[in-house]
Image 1: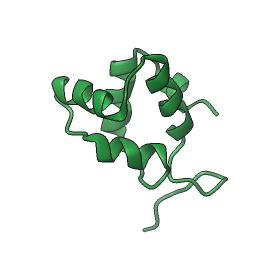
Image 2: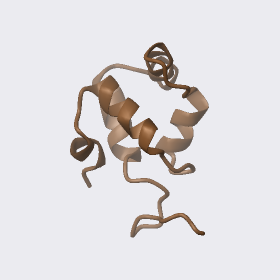
Image 3: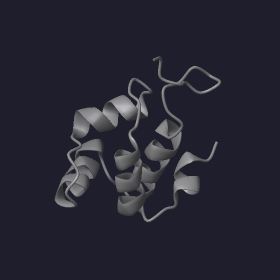
Length: 80
């Protein structure tokens, strides 16, 4: 079964918002990956890179993890 894409053809809705949030919190991709790993989530720098460049789908667990790290709601993370 094919995975859904956004209207623009991207693989996820959060790439732009993730970059913005990461920069607002003064985190590099590696720094964000470290924060996620300390919180118990198995996400490394390569995962962050692929999400931010729309080369990868984001799982519900990853969205939950990012919401926790940045203290934002699902709606804030996925806003268009």
